Length: 202
Image (cartoon, rainbow, N blue to C red; front, side, top):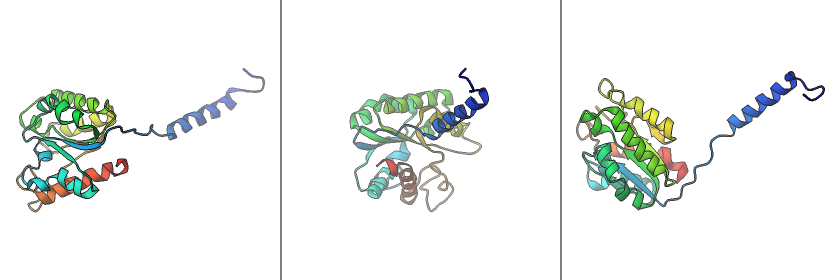
């Protein structure tokens, strides 16, 4: 040890180093694609509203640029994984918004299987230098822990998360077409929720 330099001198320097490292923040996200792609099930497709009032269409109106709607009603994470290349990766994605998992839940798919598929989808998209935003589902007493899995997935992959994409909509007859699908007013709120998350990346 250097003469006159003891542990009581070294420890404050070490602490300062760790504090500076912790405060430096994550590396900036570098996005390489061109398009915004909405990938998912009936919530993406826009079931319950005119085609031009789906959340992707209303998001396009908010941001003033085209948004690709790659939603298929009834899609599960397994079927979405099969069409990922065609409907997302070949679209030059820059930002991908995902609503998936609801049909897995409805069909009784084990959450471990559903979220393994979803993690593969997220990481495959991220490997193309695209930002992923997940619209989570939270259904108290019925979601079998799916809401926690969305949070875990976001933490593990670095994807952004809207924890409860239908929060404030379900149960409101002015915003819902049926018990599961929003109407055009509800989809507008979904679009606004996603916009709030992605606006700094546009």
